[in-house]
Length: 269
Image (cartoon, rainbow, N blue to C red):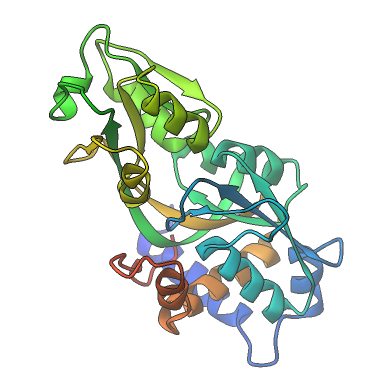
């Protein structure tokens, strides 16, 4: 007989709670979470911060929500932190699955679950489109027309969801938010698929652009570790739940200027 789902959740929650100790991580937890002796954290850069994106100026350290969370996780593990800045969440998945990173934060989808292990969600995202100045697109259904030029970030949950929802046009992959922004500014495309929380700051940089109401994807942004690291996953799960309950995630949002964002409720996934 297969166990009931709620029993599985309860068991995993109990394991996660046992991983969180006032005495800090165990030796095995620390070694599995940071096998090189430092915590290698992956983050994604963009022109403006969001619940997921960080900003990084030339010659400076990255700044943003996931940086704050990564620093605190490393502090509690008692190891140095090293940040790897990439252009898309797809790059994070590749790096985690090859174990060249120890932890990252990214939107969840089914394809990613096959390659990395997810802990709890800290923010719920909804994906929509921003359309260029001068476009006649007014709503989501207007995007799905022949000859509408749509772009999304390669190998991301948003890109895959947009591809599934579009029946009459094709979404084309680009490498980064920065590249997409320039294409919209030059009117080389009509619409760009991204998460709602990341779009207001982008719209400021694109006078006349519009963010469409509604969404074609809703999912969580969660902490993730490489597969086959059960001790690291249990510790990361406990850390993330404590970060939500203690107000750490709330402070990270506020420090990034994201005071309107809502922290995800307690959960194991």
